[in-house]
Length: 416
Image 1: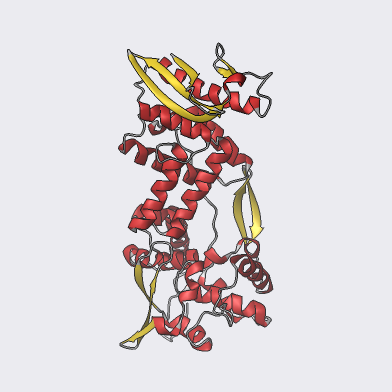
Image 2 (image 1 turned 180 degrees about the vertical axis):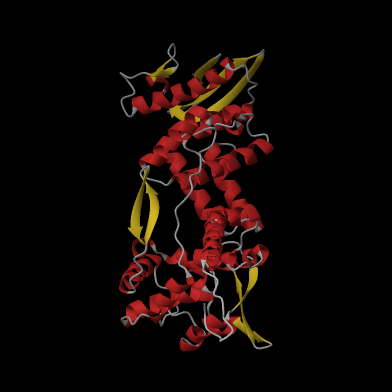
């Protein structure tokens, strides 16, 4: 049983405390709210609407929400401690505490960054998930995270036009927060572990450029603003870097070892140190720009990815990269010319895909792309589709060779 009473002390306003009787135990917790005794309804244990006219509805709503949540715990036959009651009060008061869902999640995130277990760039995605969760339920509690909340959260994200795979990432992060809190005994809710608590990922139709297409873009005469973007893109088709890491293409990061250049850098997303061997095809562009990135301005700032993509599409159209590509959109497959689909990340995918098709060891490619699992890498380059397509091409080529007529040569040296 739960009731709210006044602690009648000297002074104009009296503090309100929660008086909780449960399983033979009595717990007293202050709510942080105060009110004049003359404006308090002793029977209703609420502010008197006729006398307490300033935000009476909000005042009583707070008390009722605390009452409802504690009663819900009682109905679920869950043990209730003073810390639990304090946490409920803090949550409905809007006070951040590491025992509430949002309080713990944000504190845990900061702790991971401070310990070096997570880079600030990676933490942005987790903070984004927290922000979305606040929109769905600003007073989200650990016990609220069940299949019904899952459906509500997914529905909200879909309404924001967020892609299915990105929705899956938000669900994955939510489960990460819940797991971390469960391991610290902050809750006992395991509904998030159910198989249905997920979002089916869909295959993304990301294009890559073939070697002839890359050369076509490389050799096209373009205005300077487009040429620099095209050159940066082509260069990255040979280096496989994330767009945000292009700023690390600096003279001091290159090392010549036995006539072969390596680009030594630290990946911004993972913090991992890597060394990228520079193929001979990339050397003319590096020499052209004196071993610096073509799209770095005088202030040593990288062009925005939005502007880069706009210029890249324009350059690709000029280079007539018109081959149609099938893209799933709104449940149907539609054809688009490649120049409409190309973007900064296409260079990285082209790097990985072309090396895979050349038969290079997967582990060698992964050392540059940063993929940790072979399974993830094979999905990234669509290895199953590429292998089937290549196998069919080889079959047609062999069949064509076998169908060619055999030329017989007579004694005079003439073909029969």
